[in-house]
Length: 542
Ligand code: F6P
Image 1 (tube, rainbow, N blue to C red):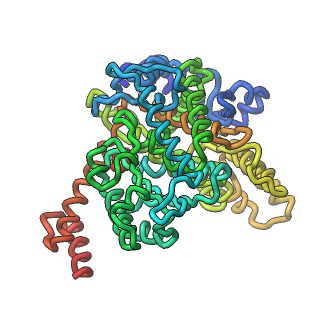
Image 2 (image 1 turned 90 degrees about the horizontal axis):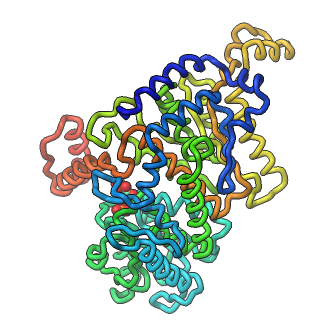
Image 3 (image 1 turned 90 degrees about the vertical axis):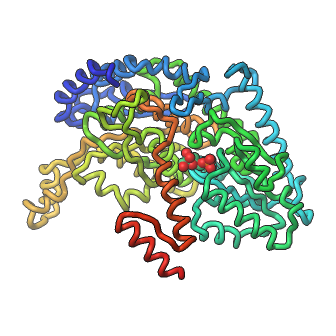
């Protein structure tokens, strides 16, 4: 970050010039704005013309990317250098998408060979389960898959399974259990039966408290249904980097699908953590998703910054976060199948870039990752969009939509598209007081002086639109990889290590102390709030 000061200062000066310019004027002055500020790759069109930028902004932002050596940093990641310095690890989720014909040597090992050996093992298992050849303990085929995991071992697989529902084998029901709240596993177990259920215990470390608690409860329930311990092998599989812990849990290591410490949890859906996705949509569709992501990796690595989708999106995020003081960014997928995409991106972005220390240990001098939130459209329009249009905060947003629906039904898709496009137009244009007055006068309204002010929309609110032909496995793979690389670029510009997550540790440590105290009934030393809450719980439990 220190080395970016000249570029930063240039952007600051430019911001002062452009901050009061309205996008209405920009569009009025330049009818080719859409052509100038849109780019496409891997079947995805990014329209970023509804942003508070001009050609000079783009020039200055790409200079920032050049100074941060984004292209070089990307190569270092793709080559398997140990860029996750605080954990001394390479960052190679991109290798999981490499075709078998490629070679990538890390510490003297061709990781591509390893990756494909494990994915062949997973693919063979998946074919057996999906075809019914894999039988449960009473000889019946598997009908329910229960994925037990949390964070990256849940959100990625869950989001993709929802997104690719049209490709799902519908006689296999999918269930996801993540929360340590006993309600989650209990309610799920009511929906399945032991004879036809396969539990996938997904945990990179196999030490995560929530996942192990849920896995133990599932195991106990399975035995309570009349199954024997020998039957566990037919109903429990594990996805992990920790073979010892898997064996200790009692899962046959033949049913264990491994991956590597250079796959971060929130980047792991491409690895064996995607086993539930494979089971849901089949190996071919999973491979199509990998191919889409690989295409995006190549686009990211080989395209000049000006036309590079992840770089453009990252730079726009930096532009708003650091120069307009935008603190939150909305993800609005106009696609019901993408309803978990905002939740997935929350982990991807906020766990990666929600940090305040730079790689060298010094404090960040500028704001880093924004709050990511969102809901599918059109639902969001009837909930929080009021604040996007008329609130005092400036909030940026990504609108994501497929031109074609997987469920063509009457006018639904045209209505969905119309709403998506109109929202970005409204956020950009706004409505002036004069326009509001004119409308009210035409209606013969009273109290026009006051009412017109309530009906003003400032506009000038930035949005990106990502549009593609249809949401299929290939496009989804590219879309996810696009956001992964966006997060990477921003992390590099802010000088962060986007691949560790020390911020989740303190809460885990304190929870284990509080758990001991709740179980023993002996509270330790705490502030009065923490102690008061512990005592409240102890009184209700005794
Ligand atoms: O606590 C955060 C985290 O480490 C995430 O980064 C990770 O995705 C999640 O927990 C689950 O971890 P695991 O897959 O090791 O159970």
